[in-house]
Amino acid sequence: MKYKIISSILLLISVIYGQLPASKQKTPILLKNGFIHTVSMGVIEGSILFENGKIVRVAKYISPPDNCEVIDLSGKHVYPGMIAAVSGIGLIEINAVSVTNDHSERGDFNPNVRTNVAYNPDSELIPTTRSNGVLVANVVPSSGLVSGQSSIMMLDGWTWEDATLQSPSGLHINWPSMKTEATTDYQKKALKTAKKHLSMLETMIKDARAYMRLRKTKTRKAENYHPEDLRWESMIPYVNKKYPIYIKANEVKQIEAAVSWSKRHSVNIVIVGGKDAWKTTDILAKNRIPVIYEGVTSIPMRRFEDYDQPYKTPYVLYESGVQFCISSFGYAGSTEQLRNLPYQASMAASYGLPKDVALRAITLSVAEIIGVDKQIGSLDPGKDATLFISDGDPLEIRTNIIQAYIQGREIDMKDRHKSLYSKFREKYRQLDILK
Figure 1 (cartoon, rainbow, N blue to C red):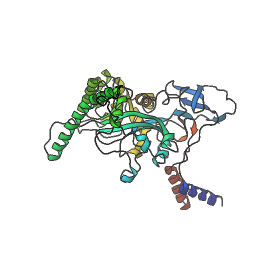
Figure 2: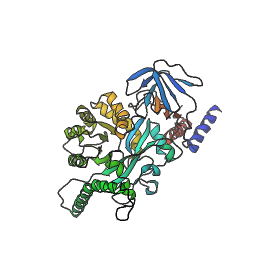
Figure 3: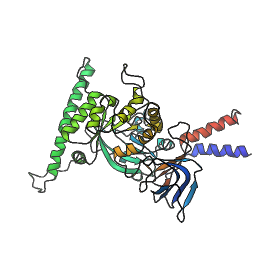
Figure 4: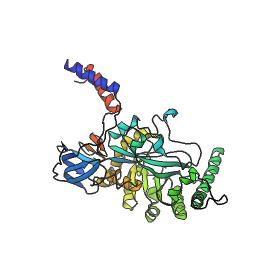
């Protein structure tokens, strides 16, 4: 009878599962007797206290305040929530089913597009991603030359407004191919398009600054007044260097051209992708250009490269003094792989990158590059209580994430993977394969 009841409960969970957004933190929470991995201040064996969504104190011993929920960790670990530097989560559900995707707009120039308004907080991919410790994502658009503006989203909330941590966070440009030779008709057409896009990029910042000057004109006389244009209006924070411009570039020529372009037009850029960043460390370090390195676990770009070049590139960037962070493949087509972000860092650690730097590369280093390091990325007093409890090192695949908190809210840790695990475990129990 006991087994029948358990079986019924497990099957019921697998059928009715749905993520439930967390309510606001109501009382202080003290996590004690654990290992607190602050990232910024090393590991503290002790406790962490957070209240009203903010970290109050991290120390060996902390006296619980009145009306405080005390959780004994019994030697478990606390880490800051991992951050996806670039991702399509919430915009892409099933890549092969177009009606479930909202990551692109038509046309080559869409700087006014913002991803947060298209973000789907009910995506099935969000709970499975959270279950591996990834709690925040910089959600990016992915089409055309100028794709639009990304938004930093917390992976919990009833609506996109609830989930938005910061919007916008940057403008995204897909840098054109820098190839100069073409033999087939297709290659000639692609080369013509690339030249057109390069020309557009050269005039874009100049036109944006000209528009900004016109908009500042105080008089509204017909000969002087310029009406508002949403696309050019969206460019103003980028020519003013308020936010960075993220440039998707992998090859040496693309990276060098992008850096040269940023210097000519005096704008702040971040290289996204950066497959050939290991060849351009001098120019990146000299000009203080950050790199969001994608796909540590990918294959080499060229046949003559070392088989492990993608694995060891983070170490090369680290040794060369280039500011960088690690991302999973962030654009359309691989959102379901975002949950594997810690294993991208783990592979880099296996090929030379110090373990603490690898952890930083998916937490605090990401926060610094995308501009939210005052809020998240490490376990410091005053920052958001966006963190998780684990039974070991999250860079190890055998580690389980026990509980997560986003701004102090206790997150529902159920997901589709867990419900399917319970379902099929019960199946094999009924078949007497498992006891």
